[in-house]
Length: 191
Image (cartoon, rainbow, N blue to C red; front, side, top):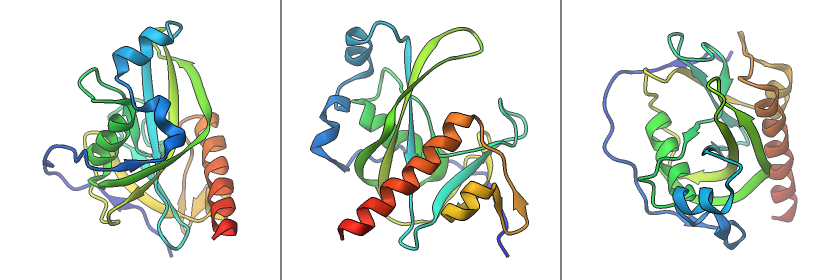
């Protein structure tokens, strides 16, 4: 039986920045300022990290009840900061802040960027990446997320893991989850 694991209070040290990345992701190895200057249609960039364990299960995190989109499920991620060395560093930082997992390598872009507007009308784009980590001991920041699950592809499609029923933040997040599982199947077939 699966059960959602709850967040524990505590502070984490600063985000690790020692990771590798695929040459195919070189266009994301630039600062937020540089990226936005080259893409003026956007005022911000969000990133997400798809983390799979060796058993093929994907990490999903549940948003905190007191935050926006309360109790909905997503992958770890968030907005790039101007202080981030690059968009890829933002992936590692957000993954660390939200799950205490250290990015070992950022391997591939999942799908394409997904343009969206915030509630305040800010035009943004979200990029999500297959990300390998240095272990799977998840520790959530309770200010942002309150539980996590490791789900199979079938559970991700059904929206149910054991007794836990879950709903995604957006249909685009759900679609990206399906894309990530397809990409992982492709990688497994190559090995």
